[in-house]
Image (cartoon, rainbow over all chains, first blue to last red; front, side, top):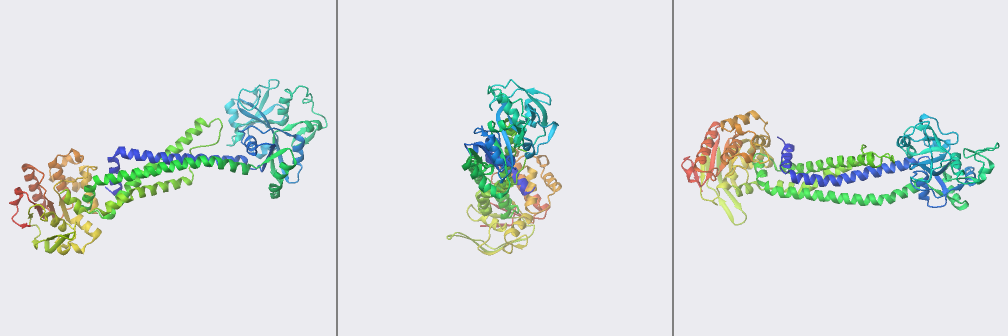
Amino acid sequence: MNLFVLSWKYIKGKPLSTALNVLLLSFGIGIIVVLLLVSQQVQEKLSENASGIDLVVGAKGSPLQIILGSIYHIDYPTGNIPLKEAEKLSKNRLVKNVIPLALGDSYKSLRIVGSTRGFADLYGLMLDEGTLWEDDYEVTLGAAAAQTLSLAVGDTFFGEHGMADGGEAHEAHAYKVVGVLQPTGKVVDNLILTSVPSVWLMHGHDEAGDGHENLPDTAAIEVLGIAVTPEQLEEKEVTSLLVQYRGPMAAVQLPRMVNMQSSMQAASPAFETARLFSLIGIGVDVGQGFAYLIIVMAGLSIFIALYNSLKERQYDLAIMRSLGASRLRLFIHIIMEGVIITLLGAGVGFVLGHGVVEILAQFILKRSSAGITGLVFLPSELYILYISLLLGVIASLIPAINAYKTDISEVLAKGA
Amino acid sequence: MISVQSVIYTYGPDKRLAFPDWEVEQGKHSLILGGSGCGKTTLLHLLAGLRTPTAGIVKAAGQVLSELGGHRMDVFRGKHIGLIFQKPHLLSVLTVEGNLLLAQYMAELPQDKKRIGDVLEALNLSDRKSAKVYELSQGEAQRIAIARAVLNKPKVILADEPTASLDDDNSEKVLNILEEQANMYNATLVIATHDQRVKSRFPHQLKL
């Protein structure tokens, strides 16, 4: 026998009231855990995917859309930009590196991205098998893409126009898988990577009369890591550019320069993701507010349950005193009861929250491979534990003070 | 020994109880008699240190109770004074054994299940050890309450109307057990009662 066992017996003695309080609290804590895990991981993934990219340049339009389309590959591109202008930008002294992206096609909802080796270097891509894309129509698949599409090295498929499922197929030419990448936990896992000319070639057949895609000029020049003819340099377009700055001055001058002096639009990933997150943040705040409200209600419910049970338990408390228990012991006994209930609620809430996130990640987000998991523990969760401990103490404080002040003689005389 | 010297207890401004001086030698079982409202329970609670007198000296188990305060009084009571009430007041969330373990725990004594077994054996309640409180009959519950009171081998056993809610048969039994147990531990048994069935039991009496 000790105070913990004693408090536990009283908690077990009222299973329904205990279950209600534990459930209520675990809901509140579960919601907070879910929001914490998801928002934290989404934020992490957002900045992880944008790391190394100082600026994205695309066609005029919403900067957020440019970022979403070119880094996270979730929104549609704002349009195309002339290769000529891209080349001019890459020669700017403020620019260290420019990686071109040619977007617009997909296969079974997975995006086909035309780019250069610079792209592979930027994301630190490692091959699981095969090679990186080299010649026209060769593709290298992200790890998740290979799995979802059930494609392996040597397989072929027809790309579809547009980014949604069911676009018109480019049946003139099939893409050929030459390699599969190792998983990175980033958006790249879901992409189909190929060269920029491959994307041009696919569309070249749609635009009748453009007849020299298959005949690269002997006088090929290299622009942005792509071998092109002077003619192609004048005519061709890319979707966007991932830009790395040469120095800190670039951050100040380059975006303004691009926006003022060209037909292109510059978008800063850091700024746009922060803006995006502040938009999501409103929803998170509302959810959190709701969760705290539930937690306060749970605290109130625990308080009422304890307060009411104390009336029934006044003889028990008086008997404990008559058996030698000090006032302080009864005080601790009641506090412990509140704390045990809140710790139970917190425990169930943690399991619930992590479980929900993990189930969400496993079954709903599986295809998008957002890289979210319920099986990580964040330091901030410790605060929730402290908060629930504090809640237990606060909820049981008044009942505990009442127990402390119980006039045993009076109670015992009454029930003589 | 027990002694009460010029003890006055005041309830609020207008209700004042003055108790006659009284002395009980160790092992001399006694009765406190009187109608309801004359202060029997109050005197018993003063002897148990559950209340502090407004004036005067109360001694129980050879100790001047006013010298002990707070926690020390609680522990002294747990170790040396056994209390029995009209109703058993067992903790319904615990088993019979749990209730007895509680008495040892609260008195800060080692928890000794063998001792509990022995006391239950002596009271013929061995088979009720794991019973829930609500499974006990009224007589059984009162006997468990006695077991709880004598468990820590107290020097004084104070019983407040222990027979009031029992029938003649059970009343006789409970009184016999109380006396027998008190004798076994050489404890002084003091019963406060207005029950006619008890009056002739012990010659040493205090009438209030």
